[in-house]
Image (cartoon, rainbow, N blue to C red; front, side, top):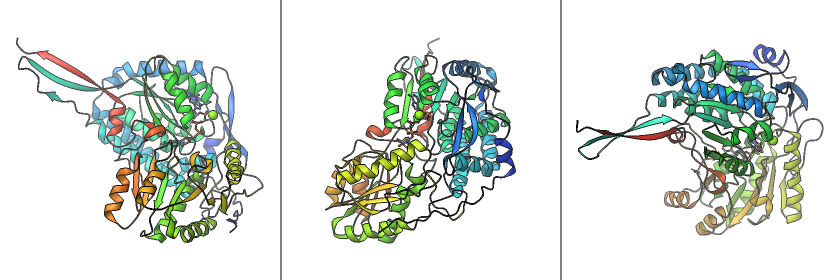
Length: 502
Ligand code: NAP
Ligand code: MG
């Protein structure tokens, strides 16, 4: 079947007043110490609309000297009584104010995000509201960071204090810039840290607008600094910096390893949310209609550029042909095109580089002998549009089943029974997420336990809520974001012994 999910006609981008005003007026600056400043080098780089390949703005190219300034500002802010000395209620107040500002400006932020990374507008709108909710959730935590009193000898009063780590470097990718930033900023700030945020080179714009909202929320200067720039320069300067206490990173496993090595210079704390090749296991007794729709969403959402994408679809042998055909048919009805058009269900991939990477896997799959059930092509013309793609006849050892494509490309793989599903599902270096589809409650729980992944979905896919931890097993990283877990990741415990013998 041909994945002729036809490109819908480009609608003229209808940007609102706010987004248009933001995009006029020259290159964007870095936010350091509460002020917008040019990079020391004076250099800037372009932000591109992946749906049209047009340049939509420029941002300052921050590098080592700018990171040095940002670290100094963040250190000063960390020690300043106007941040270090305020009550948890006041910290909560800042977070709540920012949450409200994100919600009030959600449309503008969503438009900037869609323009810069190609995610359909309906989805970026949802992401902005979810980000506002993340700040609201962690505002609640600011007043709930408890220590303990410990049952020590009678001669001592022994208790613990939970304190912030200090200056945190936050490095995020382009697939959900504001979501990723909020997962890190919100708990870091709730705990009383100060931050340097580096967005990905592809998507600087929405984060700069977030910086404006951070200033409007009234955070003291230097509490949040934003340095746009490149991974090799600004990113590397963060991970190597001797006066940064923690680095939180979301991105590829390869860069995660580089960051971990660089962070050893001062043994800064590291938390990593990395890649995935998540198994999505469909048993013969599942609700097939529901499984088919969610499985396609699972690998096509955000054009497949999502770390939890369900790119290995395991289908029980006896239903393999039928279900693979149904997934292919459902995939073919995706509407790929202009992310501002409300009819669009999938936008472009983010950049020329990503377009090359994703399409190169069409040759890899072909060479491995996989069969194209749908897709494996591009839409042609302007914009980085890739057809959603499903391969059948795949074995779990093939590169298409082992390597993260980070595009709308999935492999359908047959399995015999529960044991085989678990063995094959776990046969990967990654362990970020997994799903199981079955009506057998016992099996659902057994398989959920047996799959080595940080999140397991049962009869659903993609659900994430700030109330629960998120993160990886194996080479998908370590540390947990969201939920109470993030408060551990941004605090350290001090034990105090007091001699009470007089
Ligand atoms: P990437 O190259 O690892 O980039 C991610 C971030 O790291 C960007 O800000 C990047 O800056 C920066 N960076 C690059 N090289 C660096 C270095 N040497 N030192 C410090 N920072 C550096 O990732 P990507 O290919 O753009 O993004 C896709 C990857 O992210 C996928 O593997 C995906 O699975 C993963 N991801 C994981 C999660 C999760 O929660 N687990 C979520 C989303 C994405 P530049 O952009 O300026 O190079
Ligand atoms: Mg890069």
